[in-house]
Length: 317
Image (cartoon, rainbow, N blue to C red; front, side, top):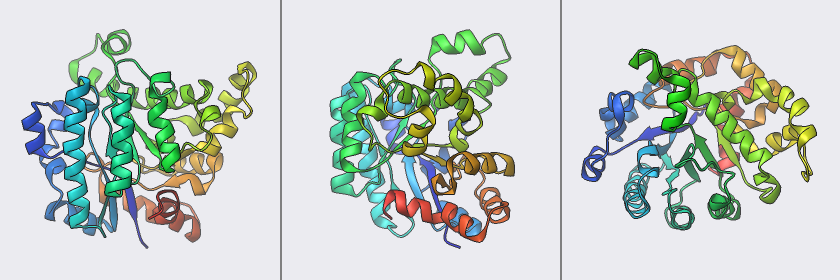
């Protein structure tokens, strides 16, 4: 069975150090693996049975830089990613990193990466200085993605300081750091971010925009009917309901979720054609992820679609 994983991260150490950036405690512990796009990464892929990774820079720290620095570092990272893909085109593909503090530059960088380097879309890491993707300033980026017919992968990012203080302070440092990110907060905020885009009219204005959410949909499948019942009646000027919009414009990945119940919920609410396999390398365990893919309670045809067919269709691989 062919397997394509589409939320797989890197960050070249030399560019990190040159830019004077800090990955932080959690990502910093994985610095060597984020830097490795050679034999070590390929060995992990081969042992797990993964044929291709769609690579993305772990870029929230770049996304938040002031505009000129963000644009410069993002371009350098995208050029490096393009060279990695060119060296192993049968094993790697790429999502662009965008300098979100300069939306015009970000739109241009997305177009450059797709049209010149063959990137498959872009990964955006949460809100930027308080601006979510429903903010009018971001429309040029999203319009460019729609025009190019490539998806935006919305990845979680650390919460703004005010949110951290309100929701996650007063706990032991290690606990609050985890609770605010991978232990809960990332998923709550990323799911809310997607729904903000719906109720904020992004997909009414850009009906062809394709959005990907990781971690089995960031809780959206579980809450979909509740949102349909509560949010849809208060929307004005929308041609589609909340659930219809999400089912039309959203794809989900399995990144970090290797158990049956979330997968069944995602399939039951969105359909198997909207589910794509991911690991979240190096934070996820590739062998564990592919083992669950092979044992999950789905039909052989459904397994093939999740493993590679849906990615090939969405990303035109």
